Length: 335
Image (cartoon, rainbow, N blue to C red; front, top):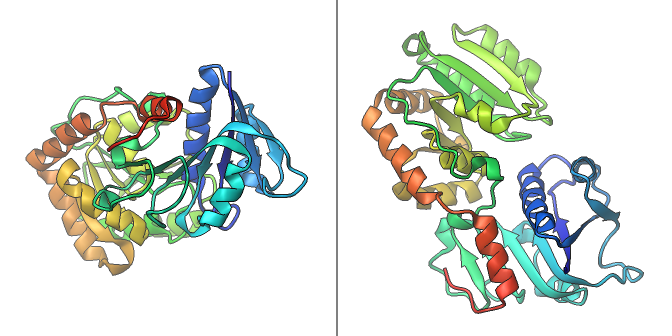
């Protein structure tokens, strides 16, 4: 079988980009299960190195563009941010492989000369591309545990989840708690579970804030069976990144507050397809407005059921299989 190289570039080298690492690991596992040889190439990223080692992948801790790096692969799969992309970089990578595949959540250039480019944001569908391109949220790579594992729709809300990713650099989790405090009299009979990532740096501030409320809450960190944990909730409040798509795949109605403009653009494009309760970009929102919109969603059974049904229809396919077949097939792709 062929050899595959996975390169995952994380912003700030450690704290931002946990979703990119998770996505690459998920797809790499799928490729390994099909019998291909897999190696990761990382450039002095200790956080990524730890995750890769935990998943028992071979890796090279060096820059693939260094002159002494002379390994050649059948496929290089680059998971990156748009700011790192340039055709000069792409051409250098293509010197190390037969086929270069790039996946990104945001747009850089319609002329990036990879063999296949995958953009997972819906708002990028209207651009005309010069290369083989897969565009849209249906190409979001997920762990098998989220695929076709939808829970039944909950008519009543008893348990709510708050989850804003592995790091939450802007501490939107705290903003959500402050927002819920404005409607806490409406949440007397609701259990609120707060999921924070292993890199979340504001735990003490969060606990201090929660201690001043009457909310019935628990804080969770480093949950082992994340799918089972998600399924224990009747609705969620989350960001517009990977966690949102995982929750959607499970059929869990979501209120969404985006952490950056990339998420905002994606959510604006998706809100009519998924009918999620998209509230807006965190830095432009007032706590009382967030609380009001969350409370409306919690109490609107028809709106939540519409979100539930839309998610089930939208995420019925396994993107890993679709992407793999496009890569191996070597044919002109279409959306």
